[in-house]
Length: 325
Image (cartoon, rainbow, N blue to C red; front, side):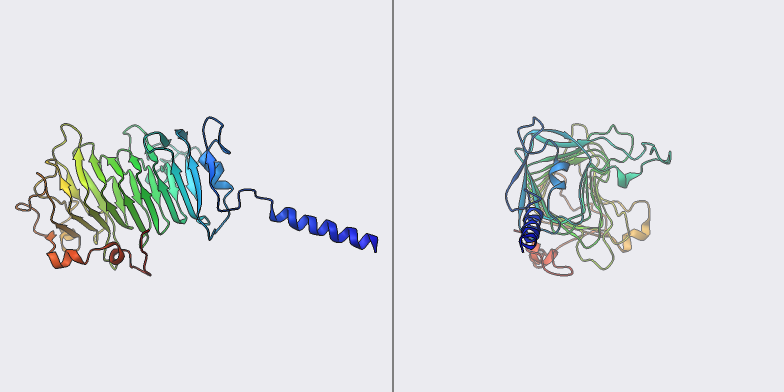
């Protein structure tokens, strides 16, 4: 009897220990700081302790500092918010570019491996943080690569040159609110459905802002609402977009466009066939670059009635409905 009781107590202790094995398995905030005053010194370490497929909201608070790491938010993580102490002071950075030779093969890395941050999980939020690829201008260099659905970026700075933001999965939904995004060529590109609200879109050289590859059956690709299109000194010939794939969709509405936007507005990527399929739209824009008098004939201006239907609820209803909180 005594032996049986001892066995039961040991078993119970094991169950209790197993249940409490991860002290971070709760809805509370965990802290990251490069100076060692947080629970972790890297964001990757904090991500690693988060429970898979969480049903509750968990915050990873990142104190000001420069975090040189190639960060992946894996597909089994959900409901995580990575919040920086300040957008200017909390910086995730790396410096891979497409023409770096891979050690294992000797072949160029290619665009899609160059990310600084890759988000595979769904229902992830980044707030008040800088994501940067600071590689030299030697090839494509992605700062942010997204694959998850229902991703939110608030008050973030996304810095790079060519291919800064890659929205990498069709029929996934992204919301960028009050962000600063800069780059040189095609610096917002990919097949996702993304809404940019009150963002600054900054061109660093004469080139193209967007290169959408919206799937044929998807109504909306990129929607820019109440954004400001700015440029570096001397930049005076920038296109709103060109179609990476034939059915590209991009809409600018209620935006302020600087004089660097070319009168034609849009480019066909050297293929007149794209003019029959690409869906390039504008509505109620202002500024020196917003004149529609010389826009390409295969783009279109929305009517007031059509524009009224462009809401986040409508844009983000694809396979189901998502209301941004």
